[in-house]
Image 1 (spheres, rainbow, N blue to C red):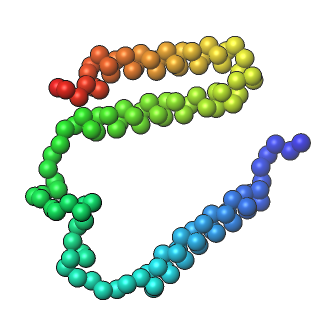
Image 2: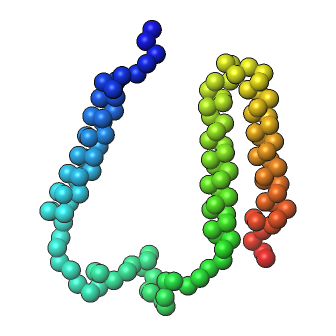
Image 3: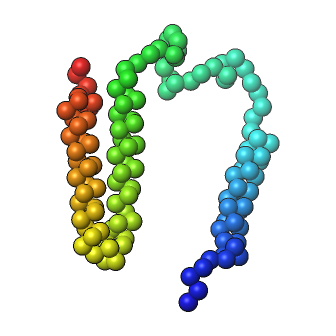
Length: 124
């Protein structure tokens, strides 16, 4: 069995990419041609769920929103690393199990750290 992949093995992926990009391009082109072209002051105005605009949109808000988003991405990416381990669980044997327990332990230590620092406390 040949375990090396050849460039010709990726031709279906390339065709799929070209078809998807072509569909997106064609859809955008056709909607641009068929869509209405009447512009007015009211149509070009910002619309937020039917609520009238009040003041400037650039009002600063709490850094907690950014912190929660960053922590979510960080912990979400860590969880993604568990998927390949689960797929190859039988091949990794006991060493893989020990390594994953260490990984999860570090994951929990990081989570306890952010809880103690109050990163998820909204009342402050």
